Length: 205
Image (cartoon, rainbow, N blue to C red; front, side):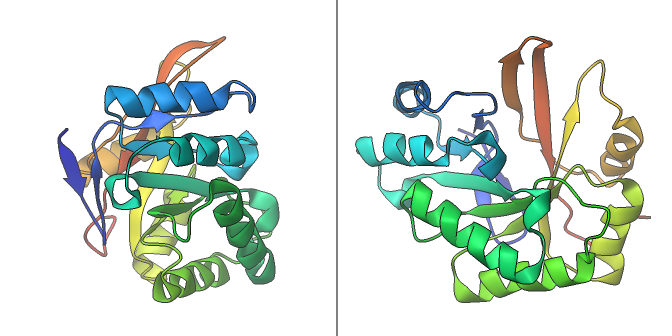
């Protein structure tokens, strides 16, 4: 499968998203995805299925180095100490000692973006996280993270579909030639793709 290369990591272009996948039904679905050749699995604390995803991975015959595993921290846990606890909890549920990509799932109104990025860069140094990313930031927040803070953002994940409100951010990312990795979800709104972007420079101009 074609791979994307970005800050610190290389990952399969097509990933398997687990949003709205119930815990009880998750393991067999993820196991089937792995059998079909998916090697990029995307989960999150908010999905409440990290433990189920971990069980599916454990049941497979795949070595850890064959998988790209993404999870995300919820906006309620962006204080430095809470971030540490959230990552430890996710690693425990997934049954791994590191994740390939750790992302801020949603920004919070009172978050200190600099402190968040500093804490996450500490995870990089410790080796419990191989790359860091963000989700659902607006253009102003994304510029601050990349240009002012200088965070090594490997991915920015936003939704992109007919009813999406993220078109301005999408256009900014497109001008910077960000690469995309679709994460399809089927739900009551119909099929949609969640896209990842690569930013390798320090400017969002």
